[in-house]
Image 1 (tube, helix red, strand yellow):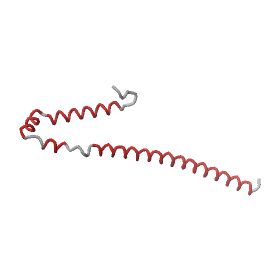
Image 2 (cartoon, rainbow, N blue to C red; image 1 turned 90 degrees about the vertical axis):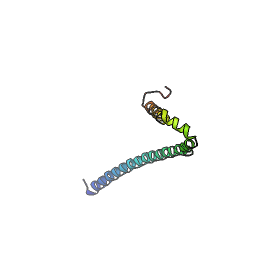
Image 3 (cartoon, one colour; image 1 turned 60 degrees about the horizontal axis):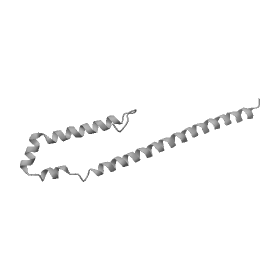
Amino acid sequence: MPQWLINFGNWLLDTIKTLAFTLFTMIKDVFFFAFEQGMILVTFILQGMGDLFQGLDVTSYIAALPPETSWVLSQIGLGQALGMIMSAITIRFMLQLVPFTRLGS
């Protein structure tokens, strides 16, 4: 077999390998780009949700209450009760995100 034919075969094999690796890298890059854009969108949405609660300053409302009222509320444990309720609601929402459960229960 002539040497030029062997060289051409090796060149063709190297070109096909390089083309396959390049295509694989391009497909991988497109997937990573789409994933990154999705994560940027999720980050943007979560930052927007955090900004919704920025105007809620509960301490200023509590400070505006008369001292007798705030003393009674602290004695009956309203702060702890609200903390438990918010924790329970958060846990309930997180548990409903488990796959194969419906979000309406």
